[in-house]
Structure formats: C-alpha cells, structure tokens
Length: 505
Length: 88
Image (cartoon, rainbow over all chains, first blue to last red; front, top):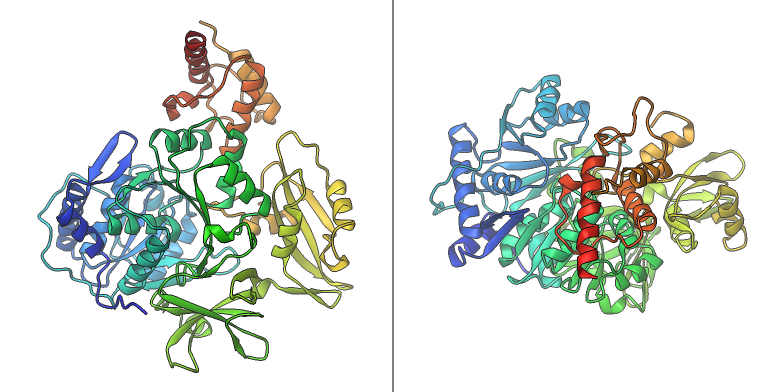
C-alpha cells in the first residue's frame, strides 16, 4: 500500500507550477489562469493571511461560490498552513453561526456576492473572526518550503447535518493527498484533460476537482452552479470538456436535451452522492456517446469508498464496485465476522484516506474510527450496509440507521427507490419511512414525474402492487413537480419529511 | 423584429402559476420575479421549441444574461431564428 504520510497538499500546486508554469490551470467564462499565475497569486494571498496572524492549524472558512477566486483562496490557505473549512454560500445564517462557534476560525474568506450574508451570520456567533473578501490582485514568489506536513490538518468539512447536528470531518494533508491520488489514478486524469465542474467546491466531490487537476496538470473549467442546465450543457460542448462530474439530479436535468449539443469530447462521466438508477445509466450512455461512466460511492469521512470499472457496468449495473486504489474494504456481519465477499454487513474502509475524526466530537469519532482487530490499524466503520457479491463487488443497501423492519422483514428504503426508478413515467424518486403500530413502519414514495406525463399517486401505488413484495410496497405516494434538492444536488429528505408531516418546508 | 413575448408568456403560464403580484411584461425577471429554478428553465425551452416553429437551441455561445428577463429572452430567440433562417 502506498504511503502519502509526508506530503503537504499544496505540493500538488507547487510541483505543477514549477514544472509546467504555462499549462492552463483554470477557466471561468472568458477568464483564464495558468498554473504559474495561480501559484503566484495563491502565494500572494497566503502572505497576506500570514501577516493577518494565520498560523499552522488555524481554521479559515471559505464561504463563496465556484470561481477562480475560490481556487486561489483554497491554495493560499494550504500554502499558509491553514485548515480550510469550505462552506456553501447558501448555508442558513444560524447554521453558519453554529459552525463559526464550533470551529472558531481566525478568518472567513468570502466573495462579493456572499459577503453581506456572511457578515450577518458572523454577527450571530459568539466567536468573532475577521471577515474578508478574497483578493486575487496579489502575487508573490513561490515558497521554498511548505509549512504543513502530511499529518497536519488540511481541511474540516462539515457533513450536511440533514438529520442531526453537523459534524466536522477532520482531514489531514495525508488524507487529501491519498484521496486525490487514488481517484485521479483510476479516472486516468492527465494534462490534456479539461474537467468541467458545476459541483459546488464546498462539497468534497467538487473540492477534489481542484486538488486532482493540480496534481496532474489538467485544466479545471469552473461553472458557478447548475442553476441553468442548458448553459452548462452548452459550456460543456463549447469548452470541449473531457470529464464531467455529475450527481444524479444533474444527470436527470440534462437528458431532455439529448442530441442537441456536440458532446463528443467527453471521455469520462462520474457520478456519486447517490446511485444512478439503472435506466438513467442507459440514458446517460446514449447522451454522452463517447464517455465511460464511472459509478462511485463514498462519504466525506474517507472521500471515496468504491468505484465501478465502466466495463463492469453492463454486467453488474447496480454495483458501486470495489475499493479505490491504495485502500481496502470488507464488511462485518451481524455476528461480528469479517468478510471480503459473499456477505452483507457494515462496510469498513482501511487506508490513508480515512479521516482523523470529527472536530471536537470524541464520541462520534469513537463510533466510526476503531482499531482493526487483525492489524491494529485505525479503520473507518462507515455505518453503511453493503452487500458484497461472490467476486467482492459492493452493492449499497442503505445507511444502517435507515434500515427498518416492515411486517418482520428488513427493508432498505433505497432498494424500494431503485425498484420504483424502473417506472417509465418517474424521473426521480425518494422513499421515506414513518412509524406504524401495525406493520412496524410504513413507506411513502415521493415521485417526480417525467415531463408531460400525467402520473398520479394512485397509478404509482397500483404499479407497485403487481411488482413489489408486500413489505416493500409504499403505503402512500406524493407526486411533486420537482423533488426538493439540497446545496449538493442531493434530494433533500428533511424537507420531504416535513412535507409528509404537513409542516412548512 | 418580432419580440416573442406572447410565446414566452404562454410558456411561463404552462410551467406554473405566476406568483401573486407579478404581472408578466418585458421586464419580468425569471429568477427574481418568477422564482425559476433549473427545472423551470428546461421546461421553458422545451415549450418554446414546440411553440416557435423552427426554433432550436444550438451550439452557439449561450450567455446567461440572455435568459434573465422576458425582453432579453425574446431578443435571443429572434437572433437565433435569424441565424437558423440564414443557415437554412
């Protein structure tokens, strides 16, 4: 197994800036920046951060939309030895204030669009950091020595906290270097790649596009967001992007425009955050005719657990694949026995991608990070139920906490979602459970119909009656024009739960 | 030059209820006044492609500012129609 223990994340940028200073690093609309210029600007901002008192291990919040400024600020923080806390600019003020008090940053960096919101949120916190807009007009020579080493913290990423208080996932430089190296290796990123990123940089899936492109010298084409999918699609075509990271909700939005744009340059489509429905995989394949589709699965605590080689997609469409390079995985069954194939249980991940713990939360850390009984190494108990087939390929079943018993039989709502996704008129679906005194639990299906379909709740329930086992059948169905999404493009289940309870979302 | 307001208003009404207090006119803003999201924009274009014979989105450089108000969208459709007619 590789060791990334000595390396500081910023070495990715400095190595490429020194060896290939003229290679294009970033594009944002008509703005372009080479690796040499990016590193020089980041060094300039880093010097300012140091003069403002930032020292090794100090937290720096970065609350901004995707932009060149964001990337400059990210690298500046890494060069200065700071611990970056990326936060989505639409985060509600009270939640942002809670994070400020929890992480106690010395500084919040933001952009012009978010500055007013950030200052209002910061005023609600007890802790009082400086709030500055990101500057990119500074430049400085590249540093000869990096302050942080592999064991130092590089970032704290707060989990979305859709069902509980957010937890700050502590990632060391070693963790982030290992994750970026692993993922860019199996996706075969190289300097000729042009990666189009509309995924928010505050989401580790988006953030690692910054690290991976710097590692290999590829170009990052930055999209501010995915609010106008037609613009995104047009930009993918015109920019001749070769790699497009997606989440399922983005993929579903693109499909009505099949065949309208020349997407022949796209060689790789990646998906994570939630499984692609089988039909969506076929549709995406037709949409991006030259692309290989990578189904991936992970959690912030180790960035990525598994990926499926595209040539396996036809054979095992619902699998999320095998452990990413430089890591290993197994499941622990109900009897506490470890298996690397032919079993179902809690997924465990071993490798240098595994987080350092949750910030100021030793109890939650102890529940996830445990000593491996065989090697004594610290491994990540993911809390996810996974089935491994006889060849060791993983199939995600659900969060351990989500699995319930209906009429005495175990049911994972996500498996019901997969079955519903085969309905010809359903574009997207989410299944939520609620307590039931008779059956133990009851399921409600929230469905987003395809455009121009006249789908009714009754029709969905009737369709399930003839196809699903009795314990898998939803008791209710709610048809919605569009399912609510959170900042990372995932279906917002908290809003749906409130909808079900009749509370205002 | 045709402004295409009628087709755009029809499409907006087909997508959903116009928020109370908003009157559709050339200055109506899609995001701020009508609370359009990513799905609404897709609906809008698919409906307009059906209602304006010959109109399709193409690989021309699309600028987000063309899709901010009814007036600007109408102008975009007119320019695109002129391009399509020329190339036909």
